[in-house]
Image (cartoon, rainbow, N blue to C red; front, side, top):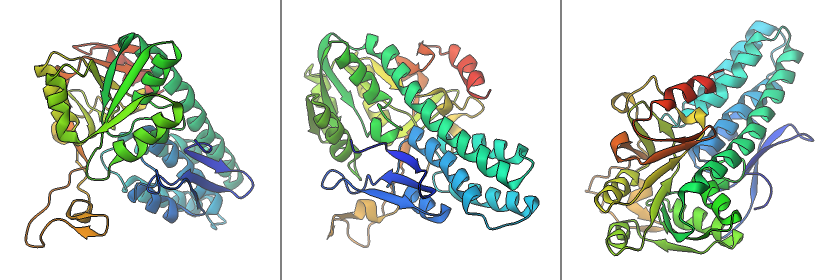
Length: 346
């Protein structure tokens, strides 16, 4: 992959990111010179994936601090806080975005001068990005033990290097297993309506030389029935105390996996844990009609028909075989997740 998914450009003081809407046809980077452009990139899914959004939120606060023209500390802090709220509002379901924002914002609010605010904001944002890379490697190392020595893994959406700073969560587990000598093949669900599996997951794995086959989302159950899937592994955008929120369609795969006796694994960093919430209280983002009603330039839904386009769904804990974090493997009834969540708040 051409550089990090998202990074700070020291020479220009900008946030640079790999445009995921252009893949796989083109590899290009976007430079965000202000918070408004970064917020647009998040809304348009030019940058996406829970851990990557945490990094984006962190860099966004640093960008706001660098760009603010306020000369006095109090209005400067208000300016940065307003920018943080703009970023926070772009994706309401993914908890990592707010986590990254708040982590840097706390450092800024504790500073005693504008110069110190800018310095600590950038330092903390870079720390968030660096830690994410290490965390994903640890998730991969822990999770690799769950995969068969030789087998086929099904995944949904994209939880790879493109969804993090590098390596990935669910795909990081696959990468670590392959690095350990396991012979893994991957079935990547296309992931309608924006095809993150077909466009992004397949692109990543093919470039790594890991065998990958793209399937339509609705083929997953029949392939499980035919014995062609050994386990399922996905990422997560938020893990409440009773469910895993991930790209819509994940719940369907979990139900089918349970019916066919196939392990269903979730790989995510501690920062995705939200033990103070339940599934019932989470706002699920509804995205634009056009993502479903059009396929490229072609209209595929009549104007008179309604469209529902939730970005995420909730998979209840009883359907999850294990949750892999940087701390290790958590198994039902997931009592250890509460302690892990507590460590993520320190």
